[in-house]
Length: 78
Image 1 (cartoon, rainbow, N blue to C red):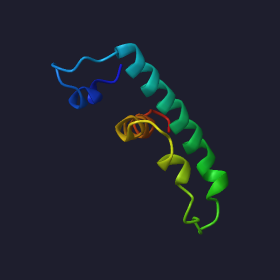
Image 2 (image 1 turned 135 degrees about the horizontal axis):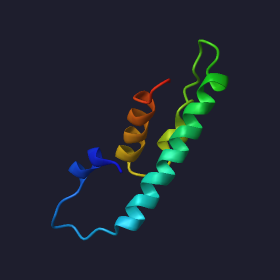
Image 3 (image 1 turned 120 degrees about the vertical axis):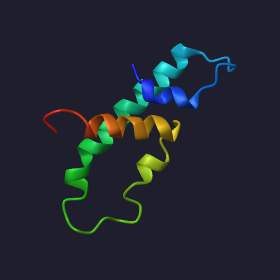
Image 4 (image 1 turned 180 degrees about the horizontal axis):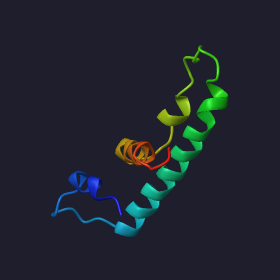
């Protein structure tokens, strides 16, 4: 589903793929929610200092969030 994330795993690691999938999926949902809120939150030219605090406190690996942002940017029609 997300081949670009394979570089973060080693063949010698014991990974619960179900848990990884759930974490990545939830990170994707949160990323979509946050990105959808940008236009109404940052409509003015002034972005508050704590404007991205929700991203910083997601509690998921940052590469999951970054991967979802790249998926959003690469979607057709966006």
